[in-house]
Each structure stands twice: as C-alpha cells, then as structure tokens.
Amino acid sequence: MADGSNALIDVRNVSRHYVRNVDEVHALDDVSLEVPAACFVALMGPSGSGKSTLLNLISGIDRPSEGEVIVAGQPLSTLDEDELATWRARHVGLIFQFFNLIPVLSARENVALPLLLTDLDKAERRRRAETALRVVGLEERFDHFPRTLSGGEQQRVAIARAIVTDPDLIVADEPTGDLDARNAEAILDLLRALKNEFGKTIVMVTHDSRALRYVDEAHHLDKGVLLTGEEAERAAAALLAAAGAHPMPPARSDGSS
Ligand SMILES: Nc1ncnc2c1ncn2[C@@H]1O[C@H](COP(=O)(O)OP(=O)(O)O)[C@@H](O)[C@H]1O
Ligand SMILES: [Mg+2]
Figure 1 (spheres, rainbow, N blue to C red):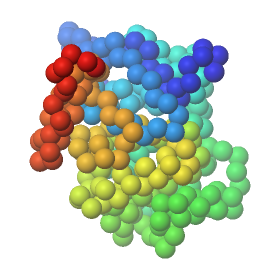
Figure 2 (tube, rainbow, N blue to C red):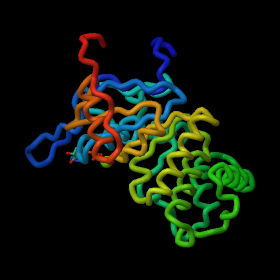
Figure 3 (spheres, rainbow, N blue to C red):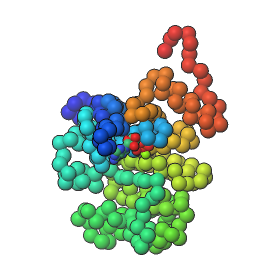
C-alpha cells in the first residue's frame, strides 16, 4: 500500500455529526482504528454509542463529517456516489440483524442477487449462488423460500449472499441479535470460519458478550468515542460480568504495563 500501512481498514480521525432540528448529534468523535487483513473484529458498546455509524463509514454506506476511511488502499472520499456503489458491490459483503431476504425469491435467487450487478450469465450466477450456499451448509435448501427456513438458516442465506461476490470485507450489524443462543453461536462459528478458511476480514457490530470468544479483537465505543487502555479493559470486563461469566483478572497494579 502506498502509505506504508498494512491494515485492510484504516479509519483516521473520523467524526460523524448529524444535525437534528437545531442540535448537533456527535455520533462519532475523532475515532481512529486500524483493522489488519484476515482479522475478525467486534465493535461493541451500548445502544446509541455509534457502532452502526462507524460500520456504515467502513462499508462506504455513509461518509464522515471529518477524517478519512481507507479500505484496501482506497481512500473512500475520492470516490463519487456511483464509484462508491461500484466499489461496495465489488469489495464489501453486508449482513444485517433481520436478514433482509426477499420473501418471494428462493434461497438460491436471494444469494444470486448481488451478481446481477456483474456481467456473469445466468448459469454462472446460479452456480456461484449454489457454491456460496454450500459454504454456509445449506446445500439442501437451494429452492426453499425464506418463510420455510428457521432464523438461523435465514441468516446463513444472508451470509451466502454477502460472500457470493467474494468480497475482501464482510460487515455485519448485530448478526446474532434476532437469534437464540444456539443459532447465535453457529453464526459466530461460521463467521470465524470465513476468516480462517477464506481470509475474509470481518467487522461485526454486537453487544453479545458471547462474541468475545470468537473474535480476534474487540473495540469498545461509548458516546461516539473509541475506548482505549484501561477504559477499554473495564468495558470488556463489565460485558463479561453482565453475561454472568467470570470477570477478567484485575489489571496489574505493580506499575508495569
Ligand atoms: N441519520 C441520523 N440522524 C440523526 N442522528 C442519528 C442518525 N443516525 C444515528 N444517529 C444518532 O447517532 C448516535 C449513534 O447511533 P448509532 O451509530 O446507530 O448507535 P449504535 O449502533 O451504537 O446503537 C445516536 O445518538 C443516534 O441517535
Ligand atoms: Mg446500531
């Protein structure tokens, strides 16, 4: 990469302000974050802390008020709206809390949708959709419609749709938020496998403390600020404690760090 950084995602001093009536909402305030390639990262924090806002900036759905987002060497600010849409279609797979499948399309047709933006012919789109459905373990469900699938299966279809274009980056906003514990763990396991086996970089927004066992890194946001050092450790410990898990060992108090 030209700038010498080897992070896949480089978020530099990014702020995002919204104007609501006469008030300015600081959804994100001077956030900097680097995510290495082939890393599975969680963005955690209470509701309203700016997690979705940061995810939307990383995936090029939204633009920062200040600062720069660089993904795979591409500064997103240099792309106009059409270029950004093309860039997203090629490089980013999106996963949402409520799956967002089209009810009148089969699993195979849902997964093939992002390929309509490519020049692949119908037979090839179908073949790639089936490959993606096999990767997520749904080889027996090609012709099923969303309503005939469980929540966990619907999220797998959505993950197949996110990987069908073979993106470098997968972003997921609360992907386990609408699933029971068993399905949530299966989805976390699948995301980790996409990183381990295919080298995908995955950024996942969640407040599910179970995710801490699956990710390589967890970053904590609070009121639009990315926590660091002891503040971040305290946030992680609080999450684990709230989940009934054993709290993290206390920070060392012998002055070393
Ligand atoms: N389009 C918008 N217009 C105005 N305020 C917004 C908008 N989107 C988000 N916000 C505000 O920005 C803050 C962060 O929101 P969000 O990133 O959705 O938080 P989280 O995903 O952590 O729950 C909240 O105070 C929210 O109300
Ligand atoms: Mg959110």
